[in-house]
Length: 300
Image (cartoon, rainbow, N blue to C red; front, side):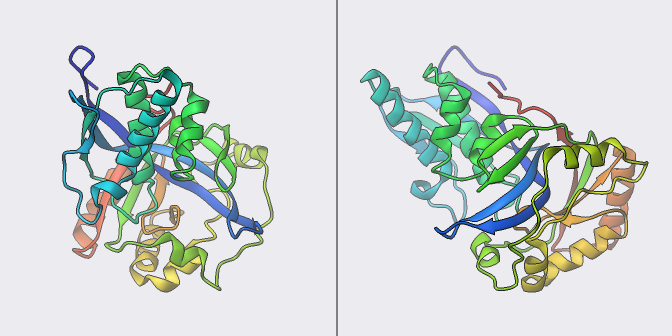
């Protein structure tokens, strides 16, 4: 991340996340599903540039196909923080031009939109000298999206509830191969399905930690992703990606899909799988590697 004076912050990273497992343990009376998961950041990132304006406008200066500026979580997050600064100080902060450079797919289960919003809150908190704490930024982000607080929390986390109750946990130090199978999976399609398992038994953090403490050379994942059986039924390319990557290890879907991942002990193992991927995979798929990231690059 680079900048000039106090007027801009450039190349601010917004890392992807993987759900190392995702269990649906129940449903609240208001319809929200109760979840347990471990969020793991990886070092594949969107990047954002922030440049202050002379007026009070918040503008996105890059085009994102399918995402109107007014609906973009990045713009909404910036305006929420702008309003909070006004509430606290009585004085509006400067406007800002935001350039968003996306490489993370939409509808992929990697949390790209939420991560972009979290990076916006972290960067503008610094650029505007707003002085909000980590918890205050998490509280601002939660109404915009359930995954946003995790990225502000900034480290591997065991999450419960609707995903907002976070506790730090040690994740595996490994490499991941991730496949984008060329489809977008709308989260609502998955959570409203009659085929979704909603009664998986709850686990505790020590169950997860103990699993990785006793790993052999083969990286077996903990638990499962309850959303996967629904997504693979509705979107056959997701099922095909799980099957292809599953020939090389314990592959599973992240989030509500569509991306599929598998853990490897070394970058060399990941590279070998990608070499085979590039020879065999359908042209509509994309495959890449990423390293587990223990701490957000902008963490407070």
